[in-house]
Length: 153
Image (cartoon, rainbow, N blue to C red; front, side, top):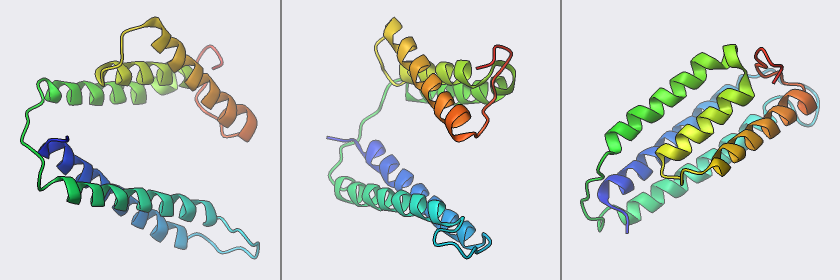
């Protein structure tokens, strides 16, 4: 059973997702209209609809669970939030210097460890494989360049 803080956070996150969906839809309607069947707004609108659906689902889930949720205190929760923000800032600062694959691997490993993943070397391999796969798909296949860093990846 979820505690009150978790249920409230779920609802808050759902509301933020719903707000994000509305912002995306409003921005997508401002894109120039083209004569083709699928204009430039098609993909952002699809993503916004999915984002909004998940946000509504989270809001409904929080509404159901919040009244009966017990109060509970999570030890060490604040330092984890601060550490996650530090990991995200390190990712943003190091991305142009070190490149996407290494910084994304660090982000994955750091976030996973802070969220309770077991401390195994396999975690590093998963992070590197995921970052390398994303880099390959976006940079090489789609052509959206990601920062490659001094080593070319």
